[in-house]
Image (cartoon, rainbow over all chains, first blue to last red):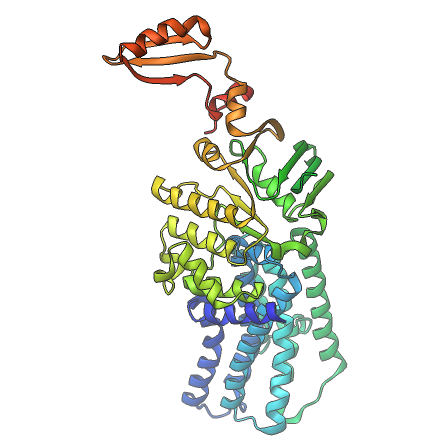
Length: 230
Length: 282
């Protein structure tokens, strides 16, 4: 646990000096706060902006952050130094992963409060967000592990992130896209967020989210075996 | 019985068809500074990676501090490592870079400050690593490696690209670590550095050890000319055979107080290497 705590603390210090990562945690919660409070259009569903930005946040921030952190550490050899100091790969991933999960959950809390969710609604909203963030982190960790450097990570993460972050929004405009989007965890997270007030969870929601997580886990395992963490 | 910190028995490493290391046999005594010399691409860093458990050899056995390096993860806390590209957290301060590893090693902040003082970076402890000069980064990397007082230190090109004054400071720190009792394994292509620091050196070329021994002994072994070079006042240079036939002439020059300098003609490590391999270190 000592190593996990040390890496967690390092990540806190580093994030405040790393604008690229910091902006991932702040951008969508801030946009949700601004849009939800400034734009009032008659006929818009309740929490339209909060729900839309929440599913985009889930598909983008955790995925980009963890892929960027791991690939930067690989490129600059800091990850190798950590491994050489006796830090185990699982400890490193737990330290970085728990930090990113909590930072994203702080953003989710702000979004939940902006949507004026309270009590059970807020708990459900955070639970759905927490699961989505975890799924995104698995994909991001696989990309970071597969990449030798930040440039390679960026070229892999951008198309993946675009698909998962923007599918839920595009699905709202087009039925054909909606059919395809159903197999993406971020779309299912978007659907569940939309049902927070009257929460129901179906087999399809659970199946797709779990299926996506299993695939991401397998990709991560392949990446780890092929490239190793350092 | 001699105690060895590092033992390598017929280490072979293959990447596909290519044989990178071709049967390396080496022993490094506890508490010595050992220099692995060779040009870029000779396999020096690869050998360090095998010894520290970052790479697994295709054949042979490597033992570090009494343990098979295939299980090196169990002894990482007894190792210090300085890589050629330092591996520092650029955005973090000097002290935050060390605090991370102090927490991992379970080292007190007092010891961390001592390490910073030892490398002369204490007053720069709040400075971000990215703002340090190359020499300072090198010293920070060394402070991180020695902070936990490791039993074995691996230094990969520790003074590469540094000015002579900074390199001399690094040399002093390495010698202090030896005095503390650490075994130091360094790679370099700086022959002067190897001659000055190392108790034993091995010359590595194309994956093979082509020579091994004390630096001076290695040079003496290749002193084929065995002559004395004498420079007289006035600039005249004379070469005499290093035997009794030259004694009378030498005596005469000395009596006349005409001798400005005398040198023996044993080659430098670099010359030995070039003789053995037909290549230079560049």
